[in-house]
Every structure is written in structure tokens, then in C-alpha cells.
Image (cartoon, rainbow, N blue to C red; front, side, top):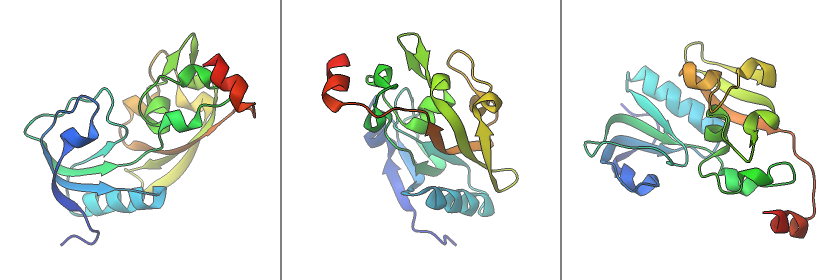
Length: 171
């Protein structure tokens, strides 16, 4: 019995940049990190496979869909373009996805601005904080790609205040 209100048979093509993908058996939009954690716990309790969907960029979904719970979560990276992150203006997806893949452009990457990352460990059920050095960043990679049990909830980024006009001109 589902405790949370999951939608059923939602077409994933509506949530990917390639506009392909069949239905998710269950679908949930987590508005907060607490919502995300609860949805993961519910999926585990019901022994449902789950997948965290960010911005849906660079993601190929089968036309057969996903026989489990897809949880949509993440903040668009583009909404955080600021002084020190101008290079990221054209990068699609979410902050969480950008941190996970150590996204970058113009010889800069997320490892240059990440102070810490808050994660939910699906194996222990605990929230943990990883400092930059613990993230094992390398070219388009991090510990979060290797350890699928670590779900990125949020990241603290080292950015600077700047004049919006100057930043827009730089972009």
C-alpha cells in the first residue's frame, strides 16, 4: 500500500531533453530534500526499484519505461549562474547532476566551486556531509557516480556577489 501520493504511468519523454522514454510505473516530484528522502524510504520499504531524475539532460529512457518509482528532484543549475559560475551558463540539468558529473566548461568545473555536498546514504538511511576533498572529483567524475547509494540533496557553492549587468555581459 502506497503511503505517499505517487502518480502512475507517467510518460518520461515529457521530462527528458531528448523527448524519448516510456512510462514510469510510479512517478513523484519531490519539492524538498525531505520529500526526496521519504520517497526513497517508501520505495525501499515496498522493494520498488527507484531512479532519481534531475533535469533529464543526457538521459536516454527506454520506450518500455521504468518498472519502478521515478523521483524528480533538483534545482536547475542555470538559476545559480553568478559571479564565479558564469562558465556554467550553457550547462543543462540540475545542481545535483552537475556536482555528480563534475560538469564543466572553459577549463573550469564544479570541483572549483563546491565547498561541501549534503547526501542521503540509501544504505544507512543517514544524511552525510562531504567536503570538497571527500568528493573525489576528477574529469567529469566524482564519488557520487561510483557510489550509487549516495544521493545528492544539496551543495554549498563558493560564489561571489556580482553586478547582474556585468555578469550578463560576460556570458
